[in-house]
Length: 313
Image (cartoon, rainbow, N blue to C red; front, side):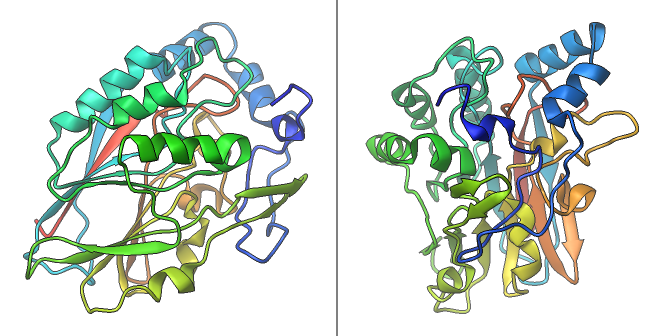
């Protein structure tokens, strides 16, 4: 991608466009965009702090949601790796290795990876080839497996390369698909949605490859369902049949700025879906703050995180 690519100057909020729609419901404009606002508000020591937070912090954030669609005594632990965006200065190969080591140390029953595997911002100082980040992720093991979905940056910049890299390390990619996993009497469906912003059509115009009805139509038993999505904006359409939705994409706002908060997160719902455990009408979603960076290699009050979820505890 060249500096003249229109995706480098698109508005900071990228909204969902489920197929076959080609426009989004609304977006934040804000003149200078994410990088400009960050430059104004994170000058001097603030910028250094934000660069260090992006490159060195790593949290493990625990959630134990009690959801009506998940059996109370069916314990399941899930490690969630989201928005790796491999590439320096903040996510070079050594940092990727640290992320994988930390995720592996959690020894969860299941590991899920929620897309956006490599960095695409203009400030990259270390390119991490697909083969390198994929080899690191390939070290992840779990009793119930390691599964992934694609993110918008994967689609926009090299979706074929990402698919090949994941295939080489035997990490299944769920795209509008569902698999039944788990031992007898404790089975559940793991469903993965196609990306909701897959095709860039022009400024503020996208067409997704997501098919929620088609994905859930593949669930043909009464076992509980966990849904993997990259962008959280699909959540209002997710039925109560789904026990838990896991999302990334927002980076928790990435720059969680004074007075502005997480409202710069790339979701049409602003703070509502920007980060954390969201419960609406008995339905549960957890939005990870993710690990890497988009647009600028900075994070402010939104440290990189691996999420660990415990169900049925």
